[in-house]
Image (cartoon, rainbow, N blue to C red):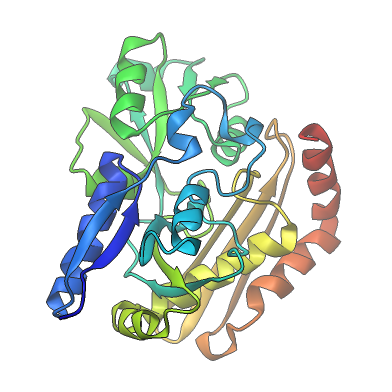
Length: 304
């Protein structure tokens, strides 16, 4: 009898939702599994801004180590947290069907939304830059922690709103009094998508996991992550990207922002899905040639 597959997961409520979703999908295929919770550095340090921690893959590294040491058989991640270059020995096995991609603003109340100068909380440079570009008079403060902790901080501090991923709130079935979709804010590359990885040597497991792969989600996230990799931005840089498929056409939007939101370089493109391979790279190079290279140099200099 085959042993149940060991699914590595962080132990936050959202990470466990992701792991349980994978476990249910595997059960539908007749594959038994068990969960192995593992703490990440990003979970242990909830005060320092992510972009100051100086570690790529802050939420995935502990799971990578467990996978490489064969302490687990597979891991599931929020794909936007995963470095675009997977560690040697770890392979992408499946991208599950993507959830909501957009960001949302959770306002403390209706009055806060109408104020002329507000205090907005987020731990993301991408969100901060795009918000400041629209509302330069607003103050943006750092916000870390799991979803529940961040909501508690919003309501216990003198803040007016906080920015979240819509997928996170939906998956945890969290409702708030005033939630505003931010359709004009470009999401993080691969936001809303879930990535399953396994060990390179576990070919049988990798083959089983291909049954869970959603091809459209795989194509779109690959374009977005190739775009991010070409800009050499990492998971914390103020870079947004979104690819969507309508019929046989991919619609892409990408953006790179200065830290204070005063400058932005954006790009849009449409192309047949059959021409999607390497499109993220070519679009990233085009953005760099149009002045994005200057913004990236400024970002890297500010974080050395």
